[in-house]
Length: 79
Image (tube, rainbow, N blue to C red; front, side, top):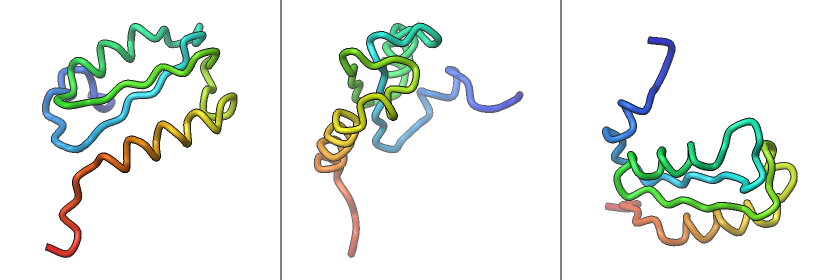
């Protein structure tokens, strides 16, 4: 096997955020829908107007989504 696959996704036990741009022509957003459904408890964010390099194209939207996601992650720090 070359690396992780969708068969591995249901085994993930860490908080997961799946981000995609709705205008990504290289990797269609439906792929992110599938991935988010397969990962238990995953959260999906679709960035409007975001293409394949959505992290560069929409940095403020990405940062906001990541901060919101991380704010909701339960940690066990200090225990």
